[in-house]
Length: 130
Image (cartoon, rainbow, N blue to C red; front, side):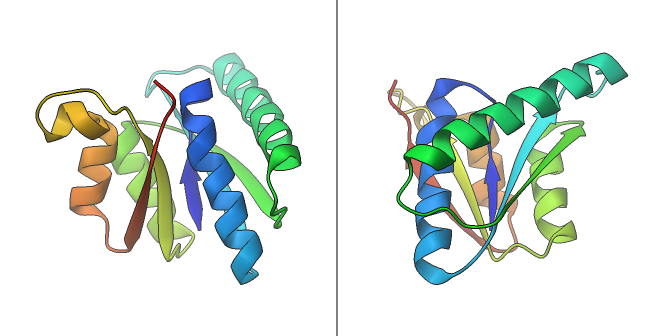
């Protein structure tokens, strides 16, 4: 399964849910962060370090601790998440939502909305704290 994170606290419930689902079903988690398309090498190294730190912190607090791989890609978030899911043959994408009032885009966030709409596999959306 693929768990998308923007490295903020708001994305941690989705990451935690991915660990718990994968742990319950004997799966593994591919944690992916999408950096800006024009991110330089230093920004990508920093993003990888931040992703590893977030994964370690959230994984330790989750009830499931499945095998995990971290990847950082540069590009447009929805397309990069979908591309990573296809490349790694994910059967489930886990992504956080915003929970704001308004249209669908406002309710779940434009990235999550596009992933839900375009994914070729199941998508689990997890409501964030804000």
